[in-house]
Length: 211
Picture 1: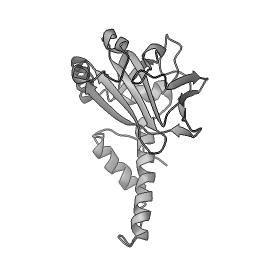
Picture 2: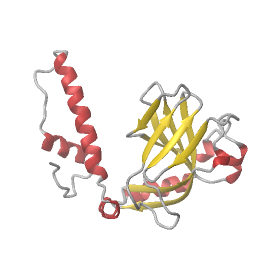
Picture 3: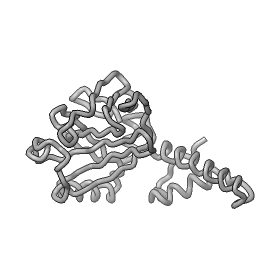
């Protein structure tokens, strides 16, 4: 995520998200689960009526104080959702969104639970409850190829994904070794990286092997 100046997107340093919950517990948010849903079947009951009246696509940011739960749920008018999927299938694998965190649509079941403040590289959510629940209106959507995104931002999402998955792989293998389920930890990163490219359907592209 990146802060924008309203004219350009994907500028500056990546944005870090921090959450502060009702009991004072703080959490930095990493690696969200990404979901999407059809807006025509979405239940708006927990939101202010204004959000439904706007008749626009939006995203929900949700995190839990006591569990690893952290996700972005993108709620689309179905033709917009289909267009995003079609563009991704055609090679524009990166979907970028300009989100407006409108204070008037932040109520949760009628309650003001979340306060937001921003700095140059940090967006801070303060929740009065054990969950964080915020809504961002989607003002614009962009479809980019991986190389375009990396050129603009200097950030390689494939490399970041593979690093994250690799460290989780090592943790799982180490736990299995301690339980006596396997004899050794497979640390062959090049092999793992190639497997990840296959899972991401990127094995037909030449991407650098990470060091």
